[in-house]
Image 1 (tube, rainbow over the protein chains, first blue to last red):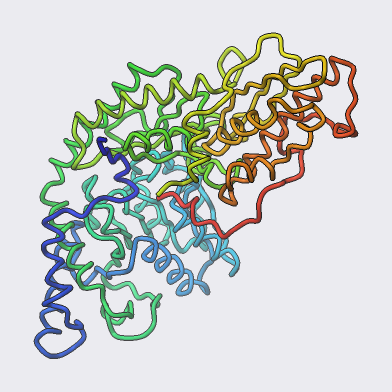
Image 2 (cartoon, chains in turn orange, brown):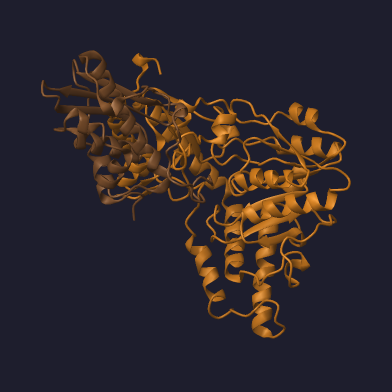
Length: 391
Length: 159
């Protein structure tokens, strides 16, 4: 059976070039980077090179990059640390309704400590309106956090404009770029952001590594306490091999960005054209203008069917996709992103997210569309719901 | 490695009793696409009050479809009174278990069948102890939650 992986937004395979650079750090260069003898220094140099590469990908200086265990840790760190640092100056945070749970759940946590969080509405394609941010800014606003690219519907936010509004209002600006780096050009100086989160495993690097960019000069409390690693800001023995892998993945992502974008968007557009031609009664979720969308993302609602059944039947054919909703939990837990862009529950329950990536081929798409057409037809025959009955 | 056991997967991939009986003796609907699952059951019942045929159409996840298939298998050949005893626990047992967060999917089948039997009783002038005080309802929100205990859920985090 053919295996077609179309969930590159969930995670990506580690590229061979990346793996090859990592391997020596498990065996030969295994020293603790904090040790003062040669094996330690070799490992330390591996970290330094990785830091230069990751910094270079986003236009930062190496000293502004702090490695973490994942993107979620970077998100938690910046929110909690800025809240702690600024609590006597102001307790208002602004974010959007379509952020990743790493942001939303951390904001909920901060609410317990007296923080007031504004969750900005987005338009029907998922865009945060700069005017809405302007209106939400208050004297006590200390932090604005808006993701650069949405993980479900691929919306690319106007980060530069949003960051400028936060700055003008005297607040720090953070952006979660876990889905953005390696997929759209990101330059911290050009964007004018203070903090930025990223993750290695979304850009063909290993799992278990992320990073926080912190603009030079900003003081901020630690999240992990202990040793002097990461310029005394993030304690814990470094995941040397993982960080080295992140560095290589970042180098490749920067080097091949345009090629990656062209390849992804071409196949994504081909997938959409084919689905549109073959399957009736569907709805595109997220930006219709694909130039304002993650290059590999497609999110489609198929009327009269439920996402998990589609996922399972495609899985039986070797195809991996993700559901736009979460019937994996309770019956009413629809996607907070699709809810926020006004997709009615009956449509968001039938939403599927496809993300193509570097290893996707045109043949993969042809096979997927073939199987998808069959699966949707089968489930629609099984469904008591149809247009005639008014659903 | 699969999300469900082999019995559940088999009923999901090759569901039994799919369709809609023409001129059924009883018809029941439960749930809606808004809630994430919906089932329609049609029944043929003979003069001895035996369910001679049952068919379903279901909108929902893998376990909703598997539960529908299993439940209709179970009630075929049963006396109407016996079919009223088919609880969601029994459906889950026959399926060899469902993940805790999916137990509510089997409630769908229990209610849709009950609604179909209620319809049969109303249109055929029958009364059953198992229907005493039963108010047919198509909206799960208005019924008591009968879900399995809530585990710490790791599954709803979208990446």
